[in-house]
Length: 330
Picture 1 (cartoon, rainbow, N blue to C red):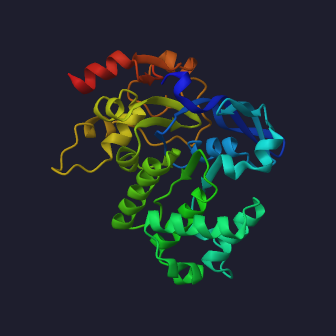
Picture 2 (picture 1 turned 60 degrees about the vertical axis):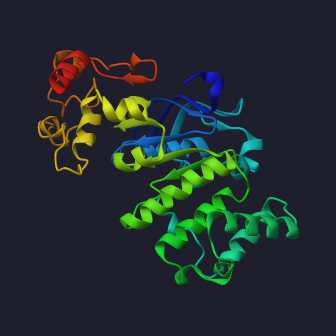
């Protein structure tokens, strides 16, 4: 991605959590760019560093976190080595909205849906007329009935709660929306509706988005660019077409091998079945995937691979790209 096309940049972001007298690494030198008007997916299993990255962008990490690196939004540096811009912090949800994991539980159970919008608007200095007009506009555009405004959270289905949370996320008209596992705990039909809604908001409002998910099928449905995380590192990134059709990191291939195919066949299954179970030992010194990878050799346990270009829109962090390519695609 060209730097001039990026609305959001995270540069060399590293996060360690303080636990008693030691530090636990959660994110290791992550570099992420979000294209203006685009939807990028951050993909990885639980514990891969996805949520830590998103929290570092919006400034919601716990006090136990030690953060290094830089985050830039629309040319404004909003975070540098753990110091957040005061202007950003005071009005952050006008810049970036955040849909947290298990977001259906963020609604106050003793307040109506309308109260959530009114309070948000008042905090950010909107007039009663502006609040009313925005509610009407957003509800009409994302297909929410006005009668929902009088409901309490317990009166809403899971899918309806998620739609309300998404409506709240775009209420202040941010330039970027971040969604952490937005389809978790939803059935397949509702998942599709929520992903369709995110795409519709992206098109109608021009809001750039980051969607974090453990499910590569969700990413393939909603996003145009992928960042694959494992143990706090980006191991592969690229356009949807490149990563889906030609994954080259063994971990990405493992994720692809777990996707159920319509015809029952998956060309990556034979590689997936050779991937070892996660080790309970400490994180490897070299490549973060070396203790599980069927292609590991001495250098993998000693040195950490850098992301290298395999095409103009595709990067992979692996010492064994040629071997993987021959094994998987020949």
